[in-house]
Every structure is written in C-alpha cells, then in structure tokens.
Image 1 (cartoon, rainbow, N blue to C red):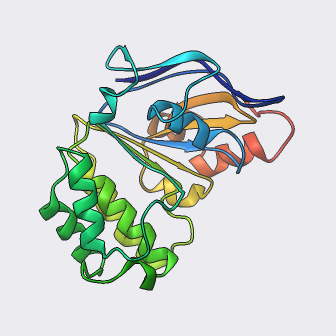
Image 2 (tube, one colour; image 1 turned 30 degrees about the vertical axis):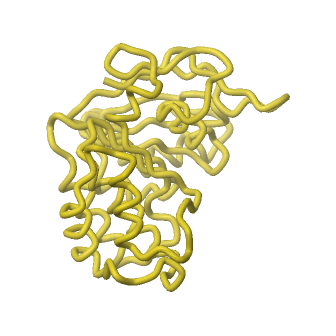
Length: 234
C-alpha cells in the first residue's frame, strides 16, 4: 500500500534520507526506529506528501503521493499546529472542515477515553494532553494509512497506556499504521514489524515475531545491536 523507491532528501550538503526503498502493507503496525536525526520524520513527511523528495519517489496504492493520497493518509506531526485560543472541540471542527473522513463523534470518544474535555482551551493543556489531543484528531479520521511521528514524546506512563490502547483499537486488517520513535520499549508492545533507519539509510525491515523465534532477540535487543555499535551485528 505504501512504498518508497530509492527515496532521497537533501538539505544543502546534508542528506536526511538516503535512497530508502521500503514496502509497507496493510494489516500491520510498523515501528520506524532510529536515534533522533536518523531521517524518520523526513521520510514520513515525504510519505504524507508534505515535502518533495530530492530524488526517488513514494507511492500510495501504486500511485505517486500527492493531493489525492492525502485523503487516505492521516499524518500526525511533532510540530504544534493549532491556535492557543481554540478549544479541543474547535480543533475537531477545524479537522472536520479539512477532512471528509473525520468523525467528530469518534474524536469525542477518543478524547473522553483519554480523560480529556472537549471544552478545555488548548492553551491550558500540558504537553502530554496536547499529544493525546493530536492522536485523537489523527485517529478520528477513517484513513487507510495512519502515520504518528513520536506519539509518546513527553508522555507520562499512564497516558502512554491510554495512547497505546487507542492505537491498537485503530489497527484493523485493512489499515496500515506507522509509528516513528526512539522509545523502543514502547514500540515493542505495539508493533509487529520494525523498520530500522540509521543516518538516513535503511538498515533492515524485520517481522518481529519471526525475529524473536529465529534469532531469539527482542526489538530492543536488535536496536542496541544496530545503534549501539559502529557496525550492525548479524
């Protein structure tokens, strides 16, 4: 459903994403893993059609991503993108104006499930509450692909449990979920496939159940092997 072919993005002399070719299929939750600055966010923004690649391409359902694919791809960025005067309900109406597949009732259900009140003003929310609101907005769309960039950043333990439940509820066979993070332990309990990226290059894609059975290692073990040393351990 979502594929990148030799995808590259350069900013001057810096190469943020370096010839990454990867295929992601519906019915799976992918964890895109790597240290900060490894190219995860840049790859996701290109996959969402928000920035253009320097070379290579991203395909959604066999066609280049663009305005049409945005109707089926729900992307949550790390950057704040709401006015402080808005209430959470206002943010929902804002999304409803932009996306035909947005469900206000689904949004409210997700908010209440994460102990948020739609009447509260965004300016009164903690960073963790804002993160939960952004996730509720994204998952309230009836998209085919959900991409969440660092969904657990700045979130306390109990809030992470609420977010994890919301993500798993959205994981149905016909949909594809992609989460980027450097918090590997959180991803271990959610994802069934891992995409490891280092310095803009794809290291490998692994089926996590198969990796545990054949190699006897966890996702966290594999992460340490790849990023904890100068060379990837076989």
